[in-house]
Image 1 (cartoon, rainbow, N blue to C red):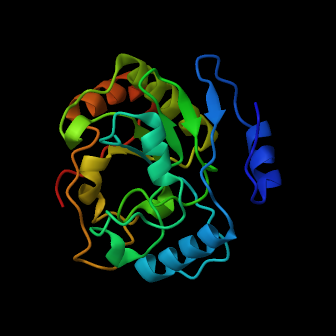
Image 2: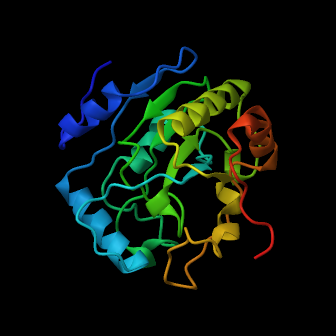
Image 3: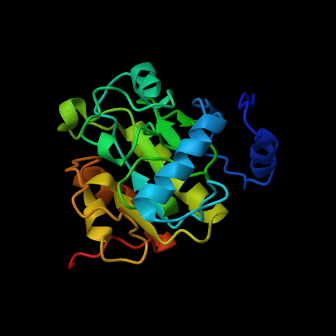
Amino acid sequence: MKKTFLLPFIFFTLVQAQEPAFQTLQIVDKPIVFTQKRVAMTKEYIKSSYGLDVKNIAITPKIIVLHWTAEMDFERSFNRLNPEILLSDRKDILKAGALNVSAHFMVDRDGTVYRLMPENWMARHVIGLNYSSIGIENIGGKDNKAEDLTPAQLRSNIALVKYLKEKYPSIEYMIGHHEYTQMEHTPLWLEKDTNYRTIKADPGPKFMNAVRSAVKELHLKMPPKDN
């Protein structure tokens, strides 16, 4: 499998060499741009949003967050995450910094799983929980309303969640993006700005219920219902 990351990816290659084998899961590496500039912007985001002064952007994964892109085309979705600077139409989250949004994985409509960045580096994909979470984007959710993710995507998400839980036993939770505010009163919530929230619908309760049913043996926790 070709590795094309330009940034210190000796580390990334070593991580991959230790990955557990899953016959039902194939991961294609398709890295987004992640130069030292993006690393520095990520550190600044961590400092300004979470009050943490860190030496690197490594995280200990505790949560898996499932998303949809609200965009039906893979390349257009990828191209929104690829730049290092937040796109001009994302004024809703600009107050927290110019670091572009990102995710660790993206699953295409046919179920192909793409890894966009190292799994244990922080991505900006969910308010308050970035420093402990792995984000999985799914192509779909037309107009940010339709629960239209495919059976192939469901199978791939199930396999990917199992892969991640085995590789990172520290993972405790699996949530949908639409559930993220339910995590506010857990120790994992770090966002300092009490007014910085967005309303999310992805990836919908139908998809989350299906994934949870298929991975119940992993005993991943849901977000608390009562805050």
